[in-house]
Image (cartoon, rainbow, N blue to C red; front, side, top):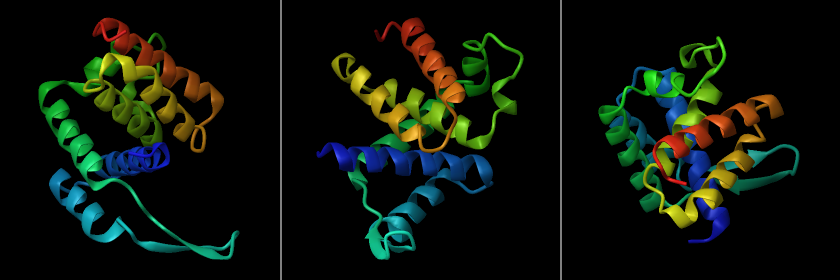
Length: 154
């Protein structure tokens, strides 16, 4: 799979988690909505005066979302992430975009082969640069590193 398509799929995965955290919708329904309504949707860009198609790899997206559902069932996410935080702002108090980014990172890293971990993490951090501050990016990177070290992934 091309790197750009993989990055777009990871962005769609972050959006999927964002939607799951901000609504009470069923995770399967959200996934079905993405597949039925967002994949290949054409959106207009005012700045570029052209239309862009939302593309991502459906198989990879489904693999990520299925793993997210399993990961949620197996782990107490709030406790897990809070165990990696050394400051007073608990995971529950983070804004939804930061929560979505770290959840997507941890979910995918838990199924990523050891030799692909740095590439995967860097891709998520590059995507995150468009949404969060440098300080938040460093915090998310530190938490991902702690997760990987504790799980003996690196």
